[in-house]
Image (cartoon, rainbow, N blue to C red):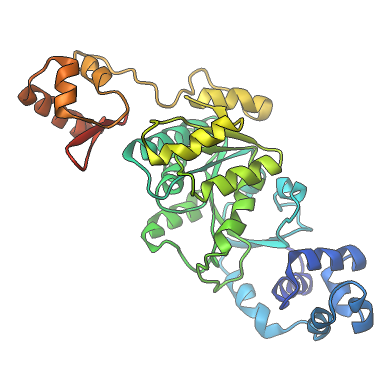
Length: 366
């Protein structure tokens, strides 16, 4: 951590009303450091930024505005990294709008680890949740840090899967949030946020106290993609915010991967659109590791979602497939009675192999 005076200047610059990231970077390019920016005359500042912004900067550092962040740093698990810090994610330096600074709760060592973004629908299907968890766990075990946005559905499943990784090579997980780090959103993910703060990390470019404003979430997506070598979309509708992350990843020169699904499922249409546009179709974690090349060592069996299920019930799972199906159709496919099917499906559901859906439908998960 840099000296207090320098950190206060960075914080004050980031909090200057009306300045924004682009203006702050212009000032830093012109003057060299935040301290030099605040030491400049109003007239000199006006040559770089608008007059009203120059007037705000010329007021100097407001101690009251930076004190909350400095107090927050008294917790040893809390950190602030700036563009000038070695801990700053080097991958973000290559995007068009890198954050001036990042608030971090958790492990600083993860900020520059090889990483993959996993994103998808908030309204995920049981199969999508299972896929996200399985891929995240397998990829974390291969050493990749899994980055996502802490939202309901696929994001939360990806974080959970990565945190379930066992072994010394686990890549763990980073949650990039659209609020200040003194808030948890959505509140239902409070336990997950606490787990990430202890075993992984939470990061935000937004000042403490920032509420969950709608405009913040598309903005945070550039950090999710920018810190990652690639972006995996598990499930997404055509209107999903995950497609914003995928588009940003493409613009930033990152690989984009997508898992195909049923042609009838709304949550698969976004993935299929990405595949038509050139995203790489993946069925296992191995597919992603091979595409990413030398970033991580490829384990002998990094194959999330393999269906190596022994026993006589395997045939019924094959008849079930991965699209939702009703009992009558399954009976026609398998030749079993409704009573036989009901007993077997209940057993599968209790084992977590299938999910019962509204309308009397069943869907295979594994």
